[in-house]
Length: 460
Image 1: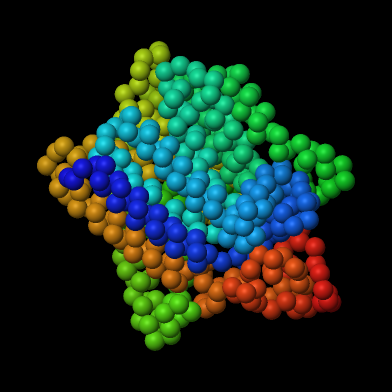
Image 2 (image 1 turned 90 degrees about the vertical axis):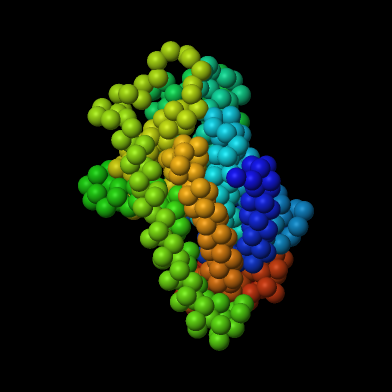
C-alpha cells in the first residue's frame, strides 16, 4: 500500500474538488426557500426569526440557530449559495475529527479506509452541496464520537461540553437529535464514556443561548410548538418504520443510496442525446454497485454483533477505568449506537426517511471499517486494498453523476423540485436565484415558503 499520508491527500483533494462542483451546481427549492427566508430576513432587514423550519410532526424547529447559520454568511456574500459554505467547512471538520479518533484507535491504513468510506461516500457528497438541515448533522455526529472517545478513561470537562453542544445544536436543527442523546445515555450507562457533569451543563448552556428568542416568542406564537402528526411508538406498532430505519443504517456504508438521490436527467447539462443513454446506464450501474456493496456492509454489521455472542448487551459493560483498546472501543461505540437507533426508531412517530439517521452516519461506517482494517495484515490484504480502490472510484463516479444530473443539482428536467410559487419576493433577486434558474411566480393556488413575507401582486 502506498504511503497513507499520500493516499489521504489524494482522497482529500478528490473529495474536495467534487464537493466544490456540487456546491457550485446546487439549487434551492422547497425547504431551502424556507431556510433562505430566515437568513435573508436577518441579513436584508435585520429581523431574527426565533424558530426554524416546520417539522414533519407539526410545529417548528426550536431556536434561532437556523436564522443565524443561514443569515450570517449572507452578510459577506448575498447569494443563495453563501450558507452552503459553512456546510462544506462542517463536512471537512467532521472528517478531521473522525480521522483523529481512527488515527489514535487504529492506524494510518485505517485512516485511508475511513477517507474512502466517509469523505468519498456518495451519501456525504450528495448532502454537501446544497442548503438543508440534515447537511449540518455530519459535524455534530463526528463531535459526538470524538468527545466520547476522549472520555473513555475519565471524565473531561471540554469533551462533555462538546458532546452537550453537539446534541443541543442538533436539537435546534432536526428532530433526529434524539439519536445522539440516546447514544450518549447508553454509552454512559454501559461505562464506555465517563461524563463530566459540569462540562455537560456548560455545553448545554452554550447551546441554549439561541433558544432564548424562541422561548420569548412562545407567548405570541404558540403554534410553533404544536405537534399534531404521528404518535409515540408508531415504529413498534407498525414495525415497518423500524425495519426501514435499520435498513438505512446498513446502506450508509454502501453505494445503496436513496432512489431520490438518483433521479437523474443529464439533458440540462449534457443535452438530450447524451441523456437518452447515459441516464439509464448510470442508473443500472448504480444499482449494480448497490447490489455488490450492500452485502459487505450487512455482513460487517452481523459480524460485529455476533462477536458479542449470546447476551451481548451484558458484555458491553466496561468495568474499571483502564485505557481502552481502540478496536474494541470503536466496536462497542458502534453497537451501542445501533442499539440507540433501534430504540429511537421504535418510538418514532413518523416513518424513517433516508436523511433522519445522518447524526449516526459515522457510527454506521464503523463495522465495515473495523472488519476491513482487521484484515490488512492477512492474506486478504491485497483483496481489501483493491476493493477500497474500486469503492473510491465508484463513489467519485456516482458523485460526478449526481453533480451533473441529480434533481438537487439542476434547474429543470425529470423530477425537479422547482414548483410554481403563489406570490413573489425581492429575496429571489437579492440572492441571485431568479437569474440562475427562474420559475413561475404569482400562480393561483401554488405553494409558498414558510416565513417569507410575500411582495408584489398577490395571487388569489
